[in-house]
Image 1 (cartoon, one colour):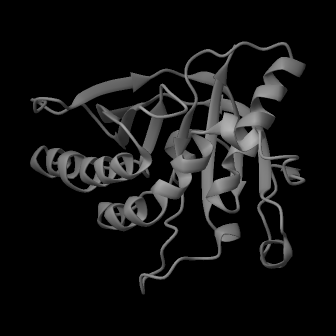
Image 2 (image 1 turned 180 degrees about the vertical axis):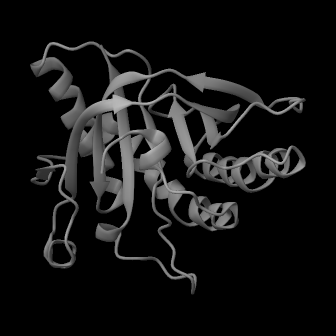
Length: 224
């Protein structure tokens, strides 16, 4: 799956977002946003790397290490509504993200009759507590009037290297490490901050956690 955001990200209902971030995001940020702590705990597990090939059922059922499909492509322009915030620890971060996605941004979208063009996204300015972040949802246009605290931004077309990540969220740090190595090896420079796209809902219709190897998170590094 390529990274053109208007094609890559699925149109999803906002109703699942509260469940998503309360149940898993604390785990996600407790690991991927604390990269230094993870790397000090010993040799990381072997990464299964594939290029532009979706994970199969047999792979997801038997793999122990995370599966990372790498895509070097072009991100088409898109637009987001976003809120800037901060949190002093992982628990508070999860609470704030849940409220931003399921209440503040959802209300703005409904009132302004906007179209959601993809799943929730996030930019992180810090990788350890206190966290400074921007939580966003892709939309079709700028609302006529933005409520206080809600911002609108257009993301330009750019080259990107993407890790389509399948596996336990505590291993997402491995995707960040690999993408940084890719930039260095290919003599590329970051064009802007990396961001995450939460492509799949990690919770099924019954409220149960899915097999993590069937849940996709895209980690996107714009470069030049």
